[in-house]
Length: 609
Image (cartoon, rainbow, N blue to C red):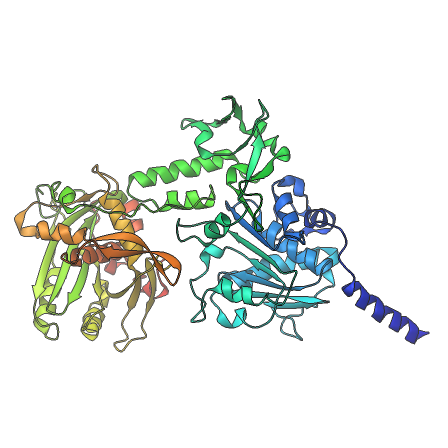
């Protein structure tokens, strides 16, 4: 009798796995079974799709057997991870067991944190999933990044990991934040193409691509969305009932009173408040631009989200817009991506040298009154060192102080001694205060790397650092400092493309104040016409390499030398490395002590945040 019971139980488990999934959509499954965890949700308990009505159509497209690929290009705060990553995992585990691959931009920290902080709580707190995985880590076949359940498994990989992408066949691919993926997984090629090869054996494969977009022309999610049905979220007007896309241009507000934000109906012209519009969100719908295409693509911005108040969106815009006036577009760029769900279109900055040369001004002292601290940038060439000393004031207003060239044999001490003399110089400010250079960056590329290392090691206590520039907008401006070189001195990785981009934004500021760049007409300062030709010698262009789009900086003409551009970029980086943001925002203008004297500067080896 016992044998019969065990046999019956065995066959029941087998047939439970093999039976076809019931006629239940993903949204219905989530409403019926999904439990939100206290650890991950502000409103724990049973999942309710009605709290984010736009999620229903997207989730149902994911569970639709006739749809092979779903693309979601959207703002950040719309519940993407819960709705379009975790809910599909739970659905397929429970009703349609399959091998599932979850791809994050990297394993550490994103892949592991997704597993620990999002996946594990869902498996623990959703009753129908609780016993699917024996989640005793590092025992048997289950680990943080790989979990097996009857009929399938969940594997979490990083887009930067070739081995994780070629390890096993999968049926369900859930790719999160694909705009953060590298162009190539090691030397193996595009990570999405590598993952797609793992699905070739399944006739009922499912691909879900999700991301907040980044830069126009290089955004992966934008490219995928453009090939899809392009379904955009529309909401009926509270006054006339006409459906329309929610556009930032129609948000009406006054800076002095953000409690009265309204939206202008583009059909009837009536202004209605946020509450009136959001009451209609339950009647919202996606309207496709290309309904005949196979790939379902969805777009919506944070104006459509019930998780975000319009006031918060407007406040972030106002802050970002103020920063733009100072020559800093980073916040507005992030706002466009994160809040509006749109790509940022780079303007391909190009500045004419004459426009900067003509605005030179007469300095009344070696260092103008507005300068708080000094930095220096040094470029190395085969027969010379070129160096610029730059003064910095509040909100990154800057003054060119000195541009000088030291000719000589870089293998001999003489040229380095002359550089030391300049870097050690005390500069007189207009009010009589004495300033010294608080930080200097020296290019270690070229043929004199060891000489640069040796020089910087001797001057480490004076915040003189060797730097190595790398192109590409995915590389942070200031990277970690490494001492894994022959001289055992600190070498800092510099994302020079981001630095040039930031510098050109500041050069474009036309009025003195935040972000503006001043230059002296004093003849002994070194700012002649050739300097400005070099400073503006490059422009940013969109290029394609092996079919992958990227922005790169290129010389406008081979006749211009770009050393002045590099020197200013390095001096700008020196300000960031020295913690200049804190100095310029908090210090008194009369405080002139070099940062090298302050306690705790050795944290440079941990990188700059």
